[in-house]
Amino acid sequence: LYHSVLMYAFNVSCTGESEECWDQSAKLGALCIINHLLRVLIKLGTLKSCFTILTRLQICYWPEHEDPPRQGQNIPGHLLCKSEMIAYHYYTGRLKLLQDDFTGARSDLMEALARCPKTAIKNKQRILITLVPLNISFGRIPTIHILEKYNLMIFSGFVKALKLGSISSFNKAMNDYQLFFIKTGTFLMLEKMKLAVYRSFLKRHINFFQTQENIETGKSPILNLLSVQKALAIQGEAMEMEELECLLSNLITLDLVKGYISHSSKKIGFG
Image 1 (cartoon, rainbow, N blue to C red):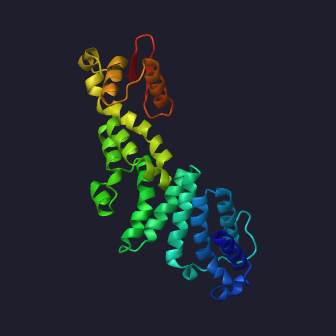
Image 2 (image 1 turned 180 degrees about the horizontal axis):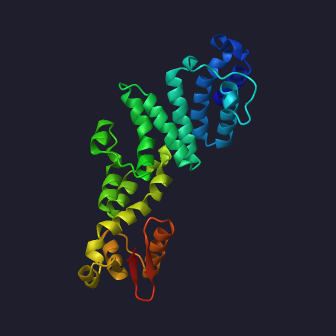
Image 3 (image 1 turned 90 degrees about the vertical axis):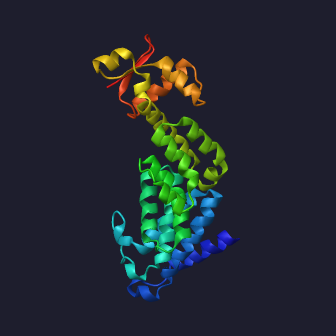
């Protein structure tokens, strides 16, 4: 019922008066209504409806930005409520995250954070719960000071994992806060981060793994896969040799690691 009332109100507001009198138009209320709608629809998981109403708002508020441009005038920026624009960018960012559009999601969430007043600590925390893991996936690791300031120490395990190549820290962080990450829609994104942790693991421990011959000659490191396998097992990542070779192949294919694998000699070389 709540959803139906909001949809009715949104439809009425979008068919309001002409844009020539924006300051007296019923269309001004569409932004507030759509924020409530997005919050409800994202919780319900009806993403198709989200995109439908966002398209309508774009046509209503910013017709000149359409491709091709539509008839009508864009809403003057000074008439847009600042708090509603923060909420709008936050929800569109959340929506893009659910669609695996990480770049678009990060852009919208950064915009929401930039518009937030310095005193709005709780609102910033709410945005950062999604933005921090996004930034980490882009290689932007937050400082401990930021995590402490906004009470986001749940991400400290991921920071440690990436900096130290600690797979055990990554696994512990995922297991300890799994339900929270699922609820906030960041679980799958954080799970994909594990490949970056493997890369950090290899870089961090490369001097321990490479052969004595390469250390003496100064050549590019060549690691014994058996040594890598044992080191992973120590961190709780026991895997068969075939599984390890598959993992390393994926890292090379995704350009996270530059190198090659010798299946016959069970070694990996880095270039």
